[in-house]
Image (cartoon, rainbow, N blue to C red; front, side, top):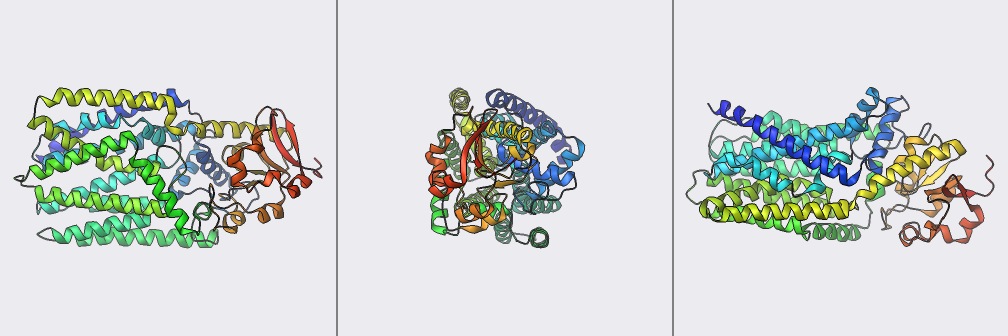
Length: 523
C-alpha cells in the first residue's frame, strides 16, 4: 500500500513541479531575453564543440590542451549536444528545464517526509514548496537559461539530499533501508560535475555515517561506505585522467580563480556568504526555516521526532560544511549566489513544515500566511524585473562576444587575439585566442597566483612573452573609452596605460569593434 501511495502522489507533484518551472522559466525568459547562455557557458560550449569536431579538449584549433571548463560531466553533456546539432542552445535549455523540475520534485519529496515525520498531513507539501520557490526567480534563470552546469548540480545535490534523508528516516524507524544505490549514483555524478564535490560529498557521507551510528537498530554503514569508496575512486580516476591528458590534477579554472593567498580567499568567501544571508529573500526564508525548527521542538510527542532531530543535525552540518568550502574557495563573482542555490532544497521544506504547523495550530493565521506569501512573490518578481538577478549582463556579453568574433573573422582570421571576455568569441573566431584572465591559458593561470584581483591570475611578463596581435576587442562603435575603465585597469595592472604596451600597440577599429593592434602586425 505504501508503494501505491507513493506512486499516486508522484504524478501530481511532478505536474506541479513542471508548471512551476514553466511559469518561472517563462517569466525569467521574458525578463532576461536569453539566447546563447552566459559567456562562461559559451566557454564550455566551445570546448564541447571542439571535442565533437575531433579537435580535442582545446580552446581553439591547434591550441594547447587546457581544461577551461570546470565541469567534466556538463562538458560531456554539451559534447553530446554538438554531436546532435550545430546549434544546441535550445537543447541545453530544455535539459536545464528538466533538471529544474527534478530538483523541485526532490524538494517536494523532502517536504513530504518532513511533514509526515512531524505527524502533519503530507498532502500539504507540494503547493507550498512551489509557492515559496516561486519567490526565487533568480534561481530559475540560473538553472534553466544560464546554460551552465548549475541546473545539473542543483538536481544532483537535491537527489543526494533526498536519498540521505530517506536513509535517515528508514533508520530512525528501524525499517529496511532502501535507496542506497541512488545515494551512490548521485554521489558519483556530483564528483563528476564539480571539483569541490569530492569534499562536499565526503563530508556529507561522513555526517551520514555518524548519524547512522547514533540511530538504533541494524546499521547502514555498508551503504554509506560503498558510496564513499566509489566517490573517491571516481575522483581518483578523474584526477589521473587530468594528469595524463592535461598534466595537472585540477581544472585550469581552479588555478586561474583560486589564489595562493589564502587569507584573501577567505575574506572574499566570507563577503560572499554574508551578502547571501543579508539578501531579503534569503533572510525571510531562514526565518521560516527557524519556524520549522520551532515546530519540531513543540512536537515532542511525535513518534518520529528522533528521526526529525537527526535530519536537522544532518542539514545543519551540511550547510556549515558547504559554507566552509565556498568560503575557502573565495566565493564567486556572479550575481544571485549560485553556489548556495542548493540550500533551497533543505530550507524550503523546513519552511513548509513551519508554515503548515503554524496554520494547523492557529487556523486564523492561514489567510495572513497566504497573503504574506503572495506579497513576497510580487515583491520578488518586481525586484527581479528591475535587477535581472544581477546577471543579465552575462547573456549580453556572450552575444556581443560572438558578434565580435564574427567581425574579426571577416577582417583577419589569422591574428592572435587577447581577450578577457573569453566565451562567445571562441565560438565564432577561428584564430588563436589568449584568455588574459587565465581561465583558458595555462601559463597565465599558473603565473602569479599570489595576486588577488577579479581572478588573481593576470601576469604582464606572460602577456608580453605571448605578444598577441590584437588585444581586448570591444563592440563599442569605435568610441574606445573602455581603456579608462577602473575595473579593467585594476584587473590588468594598468596594462593599457603603460609605456611599453603603447610602444607595441595602437588603437584600431573595424566595423564598430575597437581593439589594440600590434603596430608591426601585417595582415
